[in-house]
Image (cartoon, rainbow, N blue to C red; front, side):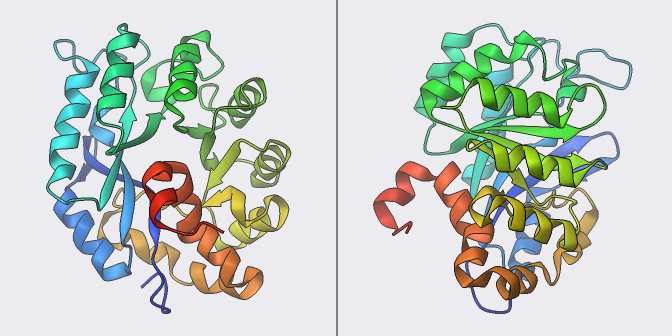
Length: 275
């Protein structure tokens, strides 16, 4: 169990789908969420990565909306347990108005946009992302970006985009995977509209990030089930640690309220007290 206190938990970063060695079945994910005390999750389909290992387009005959529509059909079987991140393909998406219309029509089931810049084949510093940032502005939804110092997903690219677009919410997934988490925390602390998630971040690094940025800027995320059925075991003790160091109000923000506010904002603002 992530929490022994019966608190509601939202995982802001889970996956389904098949890509390379990854094969994540949503039914297995739901079972592990039950076992670990995770009530809801923000999910993206890892199988929608744009490029194969040779740099070729994986879905030359299928448009991005159709691909994400299939993901929506899958999660719809689970009621409101999952909220989808729409996986974008900047090299192959061209009909922005159609995408805007689709996102609006499915706004109760789509929480934001998601991209892994390297598997998309486009560095996040590229102007190719400008239309998607504008979509997030118009739709009032977050943009979630895999961050890693590989020349595609660099943390500074996301920070620079967030500074240039203060009315758009950005989530730095992983807070610089394998990189300098102190520096990532500095970026997040300096930018009001930039958030980080805890995916593959150590318990100690999470504590430092919360201390530097405040509990209102960090989201609990795990990458489940990218590392198999023990994915949640990596996060045992995280809730207790945040509770001990930042109090119940801080723990609720990190493990539930921040995700609720960012991704489910319209529905939950009507139903819950977000104070």
